Image 1 (cartoon, rainbow, N blue to C red):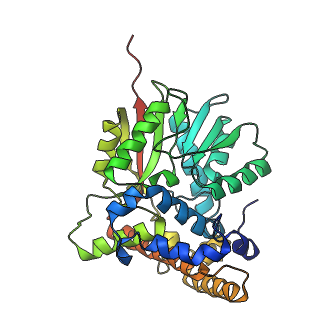
Image 2 (image 1 turned 135 degrees about the horizontal axis):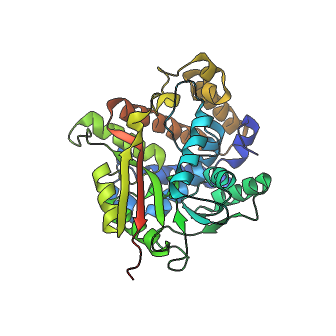
Image 3 (image 1 turned 90 degrees about the vertical axis):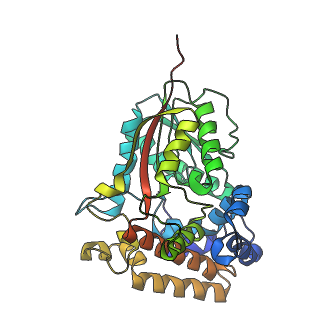
Amino acid sequence: MSRTGALHLAPGLGGKISKEEVKSAVERYEKYHDLHGGEAKSRASNYADVANKYYDLVTSFYEYGWGESFHFANRWEGETLRESIKRYEHFLALKLGLTEGMKVLDVGCGIGGPLIEIARFSSASVTGLNNNEYQITRGQELISSAGLSERCNFVKGDFMDMPLPNDMTPSTRPTRSRRRATPLTLYVGCYREIHRVLRPGQRLAFYEWCMTDQFDPGNPRHADAKAEIELGNGLTDIRTTAQCVQAVKDAGFEVICAKDVAEDSPVPWYQPLDPDAAGSWSWMASTSGFRLSRVGRLLTRAMVKAMERLGVAPEGSVRVSGLMETAGEGLVKGGRAGIFTPMFFVLARKKPVAN
């Protein structure tokens, strides 16, 4: 069952971090980032710590405000956010050609929302790889509630060193958590590790978070938006679409398709986060729409502040809420300017073994 109620938010704040250490964990996390004096090099060398601290701190907020699937989706007019997210997940399953009896590895699976939906849609068996203990624990609860324990499971491990044998996986679908380590060397290293475990001739499909060709690193506004996205979303150093494609090729894959599908979305992908373009009254009247609106965010912040003062939520929770606000602001800036996309779709194949 999804934890989208206010009473579900407080118990999960901080994840596996002890309640007494949440505030100091936020401070340590912030110091990794440019806006607080950090550097991309330091984030890259400590990517596992950056990712784990981030997800322990924000997972409850993600589920409360967005649902069980932590990603964006291109969206049609009149389509709800939830409908678009499900369609996105079905699209990936179709591109991978998943059918009953097949096995798929979801690298960076979050709490398993996409994993569950793809298993339901395709009847395939899905294993989620995640290095965050709190998210795995939450994901196991969701799999059990969905009645999919026989076909879905989790493996705890680092995507740069997966605890899996060579050539064991028919298909792979990396998702959001994998993107938490994004300097080019980590891009290539991650794709190489996926290449290692994937069977020859089989496919890799994913949506990557990238800077577009319109991004100018010398433009202060562009640089600030990029820094806000990295801080608010646990990213080390977002790379360009061209660098992403080259990294996939350098890892040994044959690239079948590479396209920014956000360009074709009738409804801007950042619309749910944009308080000045929140969309229709039906969207605003929905639970998710209200929570993501300007008023909804103010109420959430006031609620978290009250829970922290009462001791229901750990000290530092308000600062975590602030990270979420920074994330939204940076994403909207990047989306409006056209310098960032969370939906650069890549379909690739591990080359078959020559006879």
